[in-house]
Length: 398
Image 1 (tube, rainbow, N blue to C red):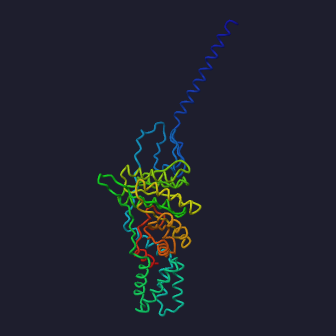
Image 2 (cartoon, rainbow, N blue to C red):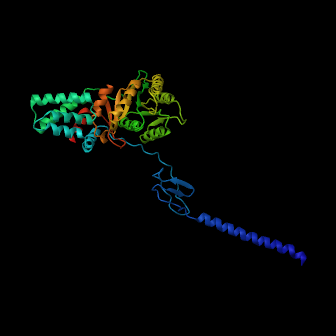
Image 3 (cartoon, rainbow, N blue to C red):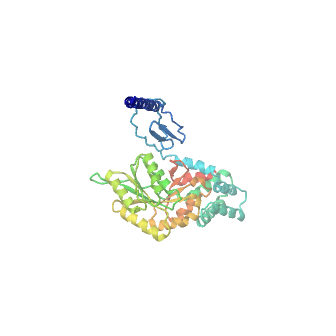
């Protein structure tokens, strides 16, 4: 009996081992047969299909495999189609509509006062106050009042149509339709076939919508058939470079940037222009930082950027971005940039959201350069070339 004990022990070990193997195999079969249906909605939640975790917000076009043991064959992902920006022609029509809806007091109040039967000194004072509240500025307001006084005294206009026509003519003259508002974006083509791109430097304090404006201007240029390279020279804010890269990617435009915190902005600008030259690109847009504490720092940085850019190509435009809603307060900042950067044109953002449309007149008089572009709203194509007559018509529709 004692001789047979090892045999029974051996048999018991074999039986227990077999049972364990069957259990493991069953568990594995159950694990493999579990359908891939651990799925949540794509409304911002994550989605798991098999072993791949797809973020619903990041990949809005993700297609989920149906539940089951076998997923359908995977196809190669297609390249995302670039946006097609809308043409720039006719964009200012939207500005006229939005100015009318903004409740601008400039047009309605001026017309109401000028249509009165008799204009006394109180009426003229009211007109001047209306102009000042609309941020036209003291000098231009006085000029407009004097011109209107002369027109009323000489022609004695009374009917609504004549009053509107008189006011429109004087406002258009004040905005100055003769200023050169051309955006110089034509590259130089040399005899050997090489191309020097037009280089646009965009400056302004943070918070004015500067980086967004660069992105929208990119869409304007692409809509006009130009090839573009962007330079993210605002290296103080990583978010600015990310934002600019996103704007460019939407329309198939490359962005030159640094992933190193506090990188030299001038180096980024230089690399951008060199890249554009090597690839025969038409236009370079360089976004710059606006968070500088004093005039000396601003002068040093912008001066260095300008020097290194001009080693590769001349600057064709320096655009200053201003927030129209800041009114006269924004002019102090604008003066510093104008002195330091040699501004050639102004981009007024958020013009549709303010009742102070007179800032167009004030900033042109203060800085001696024209408003070339205006921001009309939040949409990606809400940036339009400025037109004096269209702008005045928008004010008088209110």
